[in-house]
Length: 123
Image 1: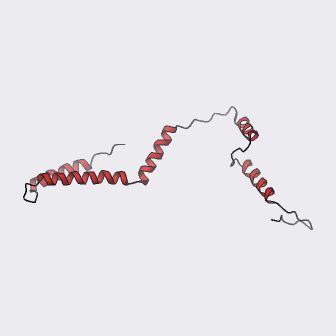
Image 2: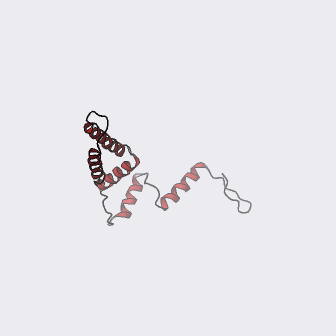
Image 3: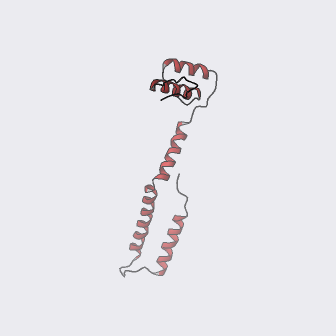
């Protein structure tokens, strides 16, 4: 890689030069983690006396769990399948061998189903 020519002079940049320049820029911008014990000592000295809040790891974990819950609908699908299965069990129990459900039994089943669907999910 060549540096821009100024007049007649050109300066060849080596890969090591580029890496060092990039490291220096990232370090100056605070976008780089310390690499050496000296870097760590300098960072600690620059942060001495400043109060930074300690992150709440439990709250962070709860946030991650909520994100995972939203990404993975399998738990909610399992709950829905369970509810549908319970409704089917009610239907089977309500049948008196005739193969169909009476209107009164259907209304009772629908009322139970509606009541369950209005419940707030547990957090």
